[in-house]
Length: 248
Ligand code: NAP
Image (cartoon, rainbow, N blue to C red; front, side, top):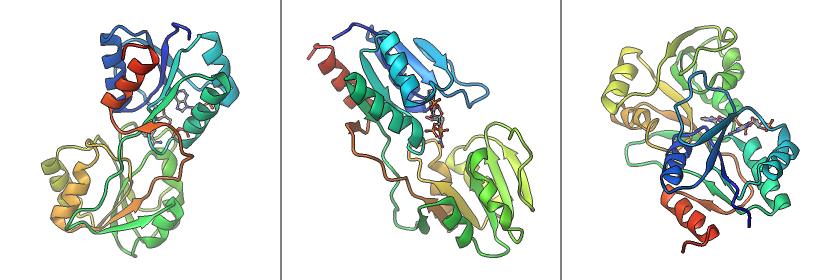
């Protein structure tokens, strides 16, 4: 096996933590970002930004950089890059693991309607609702046909093009703590939340606040994925890395 760098396909908080951990343990790490975020957090190790040019581009990159291990730590809804990673790892025979944070599950007091697409979410919103759309800018367009609904659109970076919605307000912020989320939902008189089942703790605060306030959530479930070597936490990735590099 080559002693080449570990490639982390990132763009998530877990990927960033993993890079720090692996660098601290003496590994050479390259983190790859798609380049969607205006001000990405500083990462330990090397960073490359931008698409590879499909699975073929990723394969070429792995070969050229003599990547010794590929870690897909991308977001659960980032399906294209994950499919490319599986293909590239198989065709280059590169050891591979996917780090995927567990999905959220309902708890007593939650009122969720589970859907599998944005279109289904659009159809479930009752007329005259005041809806928090906790979705990235590329997922807003399907809601444009609901002129009978007031949308509060929350995103981190401003949209590149004007939002195609009839009745909306834009909130440029990150999710806060549960108390902040409770205050936000109350002040904005939110009656429904539409979000994706991203998992993780940072954006779970709105789900907890919604439970406390009795606000229904239209939850877009994760897409079905091909089965692959997948683990749910950083420790399990470290164990796999140690196995690959022969230190266990
Ligand atoms: P996607 O649909 O799976 O990927 C689209 C294309 O973007 C890929 O084919 C690839 O281009 C490029 N790409 C994606 N992730 C990349 C990475 N880590 N490094 C290099 N190129 C990458 O992904 P997406 O949903 O647009 O998400 C883009 C990135 O944002 C991901 O890294 C993901 O972890 C992060 N993110 C996504 C979400 C979300 O809701 N989807 C939320 C938070 C963070 P080429 O085919 O040219 O290689």
